[in-house]
Length: 428
Image (cartoon, rainbow, N blue to C red; front, side, top):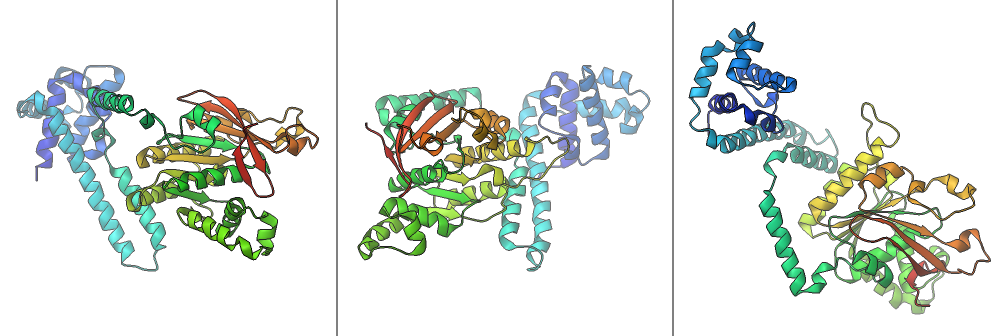
């Protein structure tokens, strides 16, 4: 256990000895991390000088705060702090310990707060409490201590390149089974967040379900967060597709006995997919559940249906897209933390139906600015037969990879069977 005041004194003394350290240090610590009132005031003085672009030296502190320097012990105490510094070269170590101690103090306070809540079974929903606690605990983690050196990142990159050179398959992500789409993406990559947009009845949910089933068949861990359909509705769509039973017949129980084996096979695949149909959930809740699944059983592929239904509180100076932008940012961060791919389904604006050219573009997404700024990729779906019954493109689903941050874009055409909700490769 170290003496907090001594550590605070050494940090401030070092900054006075070497003012070039002040700017970077201010990005990692703040005044609330100091326990001593005197040290808080000294830190504020250094902040003010830095904000003015004035070197935070002992001489400048004395000149700029001549009327109040006596309140922090005067020149004598500041000189004493500078003299107590063992070595400026140890500053990084001392600063790290200071930041860690502040995090420990906050975590201890959080534990004390939740002790009272845990002891009262009527205080809050237990699951909600766990999610809230986890989120607050993660917020305590000092970001400044997570930085890796430039050489560490470069070494990791080169080691990964060597592995790809020796095993070309390593370059590929999670293959969807749709060959032309996989050629464009090289498989969906971990840590990526893609948006999938389409108007109602285009096959958005069917496409997402087909992706989930194809990925699950490979033994990968899949999770779905459905804010629109309940589990029974999702099961109907999965089984209709995999067992080739009319969705309408399935809904009313009009199923031939010989289809039982097909239904059983479908259920075997569906059972490998975690489905959460809780309504009114937040991005923080989704991120928390993703982390829990990653810890407990692994997580590779996530589908969220759909982004605009995720609840996000308003903040000061919010505009119409601010909340959705925060939602997308949180989801993308969760994808990176969990090392998984996330596909977020999105609504399209209704005015697309009123114009002559109905093939969607990125700006047709509801909240396109928010989604477009954050998403690593955007996929847009279109079926011409929906608007033009006599089209030559009967049973064709256009999959437009309209944005891909780390790869090419392009259009893929797949076969769509609206009776069975199946989507397959189009080889003709």
